[in-house]
Length: 80
Image (tube, rainbow, N blue to C red):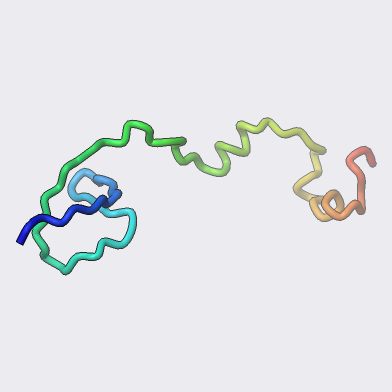
């Protein structure tokens, strides 16, 4: 039987290749792997806190304590 070709996106974790999605092969099927490295990894994953801090947002000092007031216009940003 000849070779069947398919593309499987995967991540190498330092030991094994981990497919990013379903691979339709029976367990223990022998395969031949050709590796094309994706140099453009895209944006790296950053934590929410890192992203939030980078936005340098400004707001009132009591924003976290009075969030509902500000969200639902119970208190305006200019009110003391």
